Figure 1 (cartoon, rainbow, N blue to C red):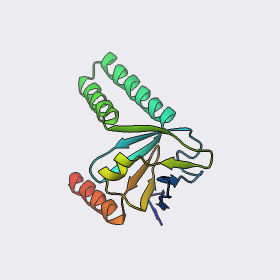
Figure 2: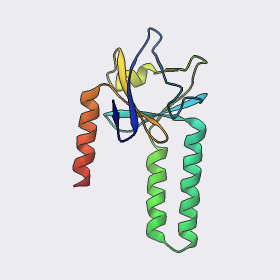
Figure 3: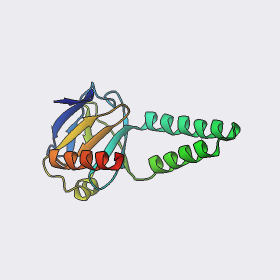
Figure 4: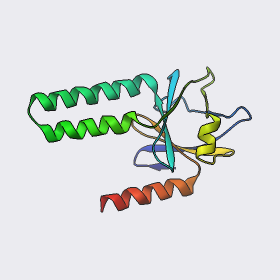
Length: 146
């Protein structure tokens, strides 16, 4: 099933607490993975190097906005950097067989049992406990846009 060109997969959590990340995903070739809390419904998995590049690009945009005297734009980027920098839960290594460990404290936080729903985005994977949590997240996003 696909939504807006984002690939959605269910991933079974094995006995070691690991999920297999498809090599075709946005973090398919990554070695170091950042797990970041988004909110109470979802967490995200980032390639650590790409995550750092995103932050650097945002910092550069903030500096450019300041040099142009656009304070509102600078404040926007600074707030975005602050938001993206918060909620780091763990940094882990992906195995050579493309397995990513979901730490116990993350599984407990999201009440995850035997599988998760992974939604491949542009630069990270959003992970939900199930389709119900994903639908709740989408509904909240739509309501925020109204």
